[in-house]
Length: 74
Image (tube, rainbow, N blue to C red):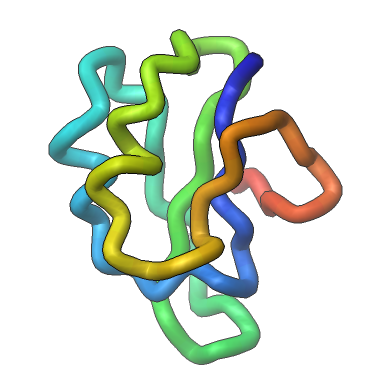
């Protein structure tokens, strides 16, 4: 099951982008409610490796399950 980046929790640190082995994480347009850049995971490409979850320094920004209602895309 793919992971989810919670749009309103993400702070745009982007450690996940460099760590992802399949390049399934992209920056979303504009800012989130916190005023920071945000990223999203392409559920169709994610291989559920969990590396993004391990490297993200923002608690609660990435969930180990697919939650499309919490993640904006594009």
